[in-house]
Image (cartoon, rainbow, N blue to C red; front, side):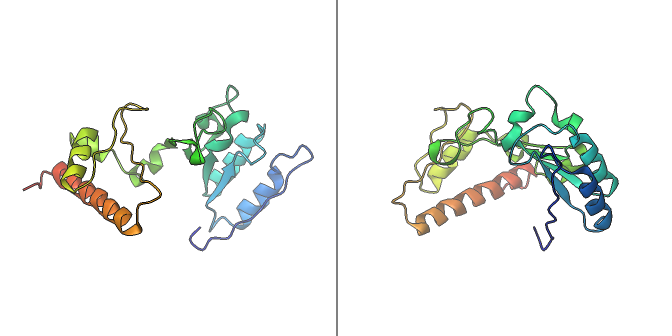
Length: 192
């Protein structure tokens, strides 16, 4: 957390975030206030979450929503209504998307407009580069082209085996970084 201090707040008699503790902590730390994370690990819908978000915003903070525990929110609310500024939707618990060693991961990130300039755009699509171009360019770097259409359309499947040495993984990462830099040059029409 870049040297920031985590302040834990208690819960009320219903095990929800204690709004008064949030208010006191936010007011006492408004110069350094960063965020509150919601939902909590116990994953229940908290009727006072919108008030908590207002307190955080009023004191200059941002609200981060952890999409891994959205079970309690589905059908009851939305990210916008709650007041979240930033949310990663790692939906493995809510929508049974594989997580960990079970397969491909997915995790869209949602941000409000005021945070959008701090996030990357879509460098490939805005440059007219497609996944097949990246796959073919990896071949130019001496790697076998990754699968592109199975099991999920529209992605590159890169699965190094356990027997790959670190040096080879580093070489692969360097190739991807180089390809990304090439895309950036192409996007800026600096390609020669």
